[in-house]
Length: 598
Image (cartoon, rainbow, N blue to C red; front, side, top):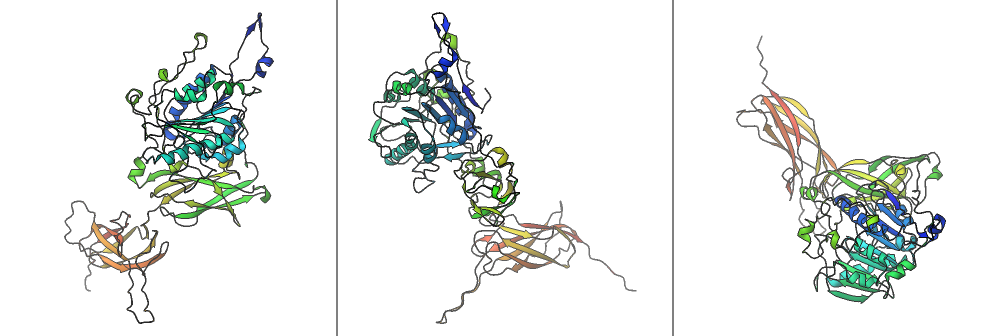
């Protein structure tokens, strides 16, 4: 199987009846449970998630010919939405985005409690969230369908690795919220299990024996710490959690209609028609549109907000669709934050054997409840490829969250949040329809990417000559322009007296400082001339510039020197000490010229 591709597995079922074979047309008309397996992009965990989904696909193929795989990097919303129609069993592995969480103050159904998918086919680790609103509005599952959410954050009441889990009430809200959209789409049960290999649930349901509740309670990951409560979001449904301990560990949950049996799921299966057909992705390529001159409205200071603008030209102005949305992501090239640079996208399971004794571990395949394959239908062994990553935490830089674009006189404009870590980034913009679905890859190729240097909250830019010459012991002048690229003013202007004649508050000014540095190897030049300073305007505001003249005296010994130029800010101190690179001017100092009287 080609990794990442969308594949439909159709197993030909031949039944001998009185020496004859059932015609293919009759076979195709039979009802067969449709099983849809979805793997979203999760960085380094994606390969492991594909392996888990493939185990479930092999298990499903023993019971039904109607198995659809949609794996990253081709797991787009258009492909997933079409595949889900009429599905009896749905398995999703990927990023989870639920609520309550630290990312929102209130429930946001547009992106929460759903899927994290590729914005466009081949989009790699970037992911876009399609929440409960889109699922409930645009998906129609088979009657009595079951949805399995595997290895997700938030779906079972959990949080993210490294973040505090929160109290039980928060976990209950997450469970209830995450199931709501799928129930609106027609599901009768939503199972969330953070660690168990999902093939157990797929094979157990398709075997058609017992209730869904019993299948969940007899899973290898069962802890025996049951909590039950009525669903608030989905009337008539019951929610259950099986905590790791009596009070902590929210990694297993189910929300279902009481009494739902596996046989009900099979009996309501849809009929196979022509299998799964890959949908056509929306496009604006070929309409004569051009997106160029991309730029940021203000200098990109870490943690600030600015606007990303595009000039848009069109052969036919009416061809530009209304309601366009634009998403941005910041791909780090070199970050100035060593902690952020070293942080990986996921926490990795140490090993199946070592983790087997721990709550929530991934059990070996042979303990995951899979029936032995029939001798005549033994599937090829699946390459284990090493341990499978556990629930993957969110990586904000990989999220594509489109917002409505504002039409300007020349093009489009959208607000963007600058990353909090200074460094070099590739700013990638994606264009989307009004409902958030991304246009195809050919359309995305119309939008240019930007290489952006994100500066810190305390940053300066120096415009000074790269090199000058000077005569030993003589005066040399340097004209330097300095720009405040930080988030706060340097110093403050003077405050005028009040009507009562209060004392004047003097201005506070930053100082431009130049120091000599001898770069000659093994030099013994003796004392170097003292530094030179020049006052800058009081309260130099962010994005404002000032030009100053530095009057320096060249060292008495000829040679090669550097002049290091820094800014000292009142109340803050040296920018160079704070990590802002100073300006460097190379100075070649020659000997004093001699003259002979006539």
